[in-house]
Each structure stands twice: as C-alpha cells, then as structure tokens.
Amino acid sequence: MNRKFTLCCLIAPLAFSIVQAQSPTVVVQAASPAPIASTIAATPAPSDSKSLPTLTKLLQEMKATNEETLKKQEATLQQLDDLQKAAEQMKIFGKRG
Image 1 (cartoon, rainbow, N blue to C red):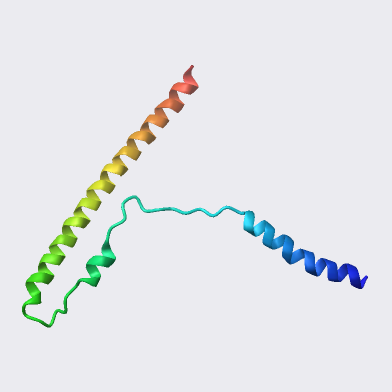
Image 2: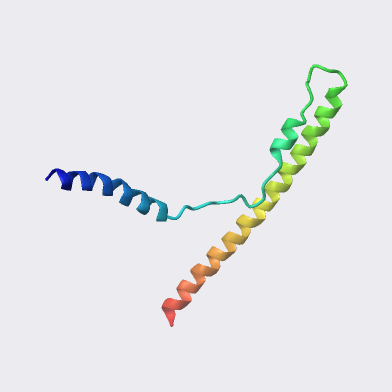
C-alpha cells in the first residue's frame, strides 16, 4: 500500500508536466507595431525653454502617427464589414438553392 502511494506521488507530477508541455500556446501579434517606446525614451525634459519646440514637434509626430494608425484601422474595419455582408449573402443564397 505504501509503495502504491509513493509511486502515485511520483507519477502524477510527471504526467501533469508532460500534459502541460504538450498544450499549445497562442501568440497574437499586433497588426502594425508602433515604435512608441523609442519616442517616449527620446522625450526631453520640459523644464528647458529650448525643449518646448522639440516637445511640440514630437507631439505633432505622435499625432500624425496616431492618425495614420486610425485610418488603417478604419480601412480594416470596413473590409471586415464587407466580408461579413458577403458571408451573410452567401448564407441567404445557400438557403435558397
């Protein structure tokens, strides 16, 4: 009885680690990664009077980048809507004939 218990205690963690190692992991990548970290790291200190134009320029560049990203996302959403409408039409036509 003692041997069976000891054997179970040794086999159970081994079996669990094997099952866990075989389970797939899902990695989702961003569609277009933005280099936000590099722009934030280059931000000058706002206390300098010379850094104000630099900071303004940086903010304008960030705004332009955000606008481009929003335009891309809007276009992607439009494509997805079109695909959804086409799929709905296919379902309707499939039921008819």
